Image 1 (spheres, rainbow, N blue to C red):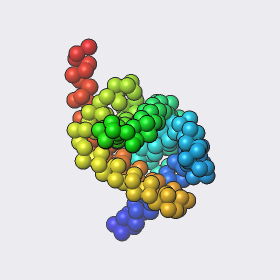
Image 2 (tube, rainbow, N blue to C red; image 1 turned 135 degrees about the vertical axis):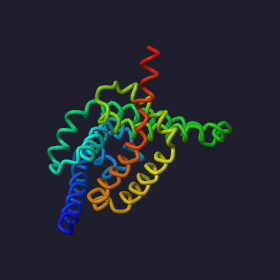
Image 3 (cartoon, one colour; image 1 turned 90 degrees about the horizontal axis):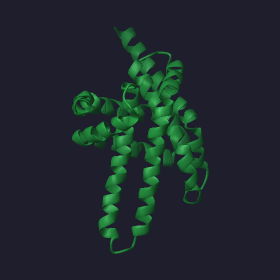
Image 4 (cartoon, rainbow, N blue to C red; image 1 turned 45 degrees about the horizontal axis):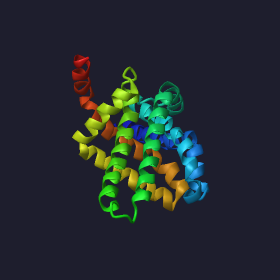
Length: 219
C-alpha cells in the first residue's frame, strides 16, 4: 500500500509539473509579450497571441481527464484534437475583454463611469469565467458546437457560481505569483492551478446535458 501511495503521489506530481512546462511552451508567444515587453505600450500584441492560451489550457484539461501517465503524448493529442475550437474560445474572449477595457478607459473619470465601470467589470468577469468553463467543455463535449457550449457554460457558471469564484481566486493567486516570480511560478504552479480550475469546471458541467436537451427539443 505504501509503495502504491508513493507511486501515485510521484506520478501526480510529475503530471502536474510536466503539464506546467507544456502549457508554458504552448503559450510561449503570449507569455513572451506579457513578460518581456512593457505591457502598457505593447498590449495590442496580446490580442493576436491570446488564442495560444486556449489550446494549451484545453490540452492540459485533456491530460487531467484522461489520467494518462504519458503526459507529453496526451497533451499533444489534446492540443491537436481540441486546439482549433479552444483557440476560437480564447480569441473571442480576448476580443471581448479588449472592447470592455477600452470602454472602461473611455468611461474613467466621467460622470457615467460610476455606473458603467462596475457593469463592465462584471461583464469582464463573466467573460473570463465563461471562457474557462467552455475550454473544459470543448474537451468534454467535442460533438457540440462551440457557440452552444458557450451559452450553456455561461448559464452553468452563473448557476454554480461558487465553483467560478474558486477558479477566479486560484487564477488571481497564480497571476500574483507569476508577477512576483515568473519562471518558478510558471514552472511549478501552472499545472496545479489549471487542475483546480478543471475540477471546478467538471463539477459545473454536470448539468450540461440538462441544458442542451430543452434547446434540442425547442428546435
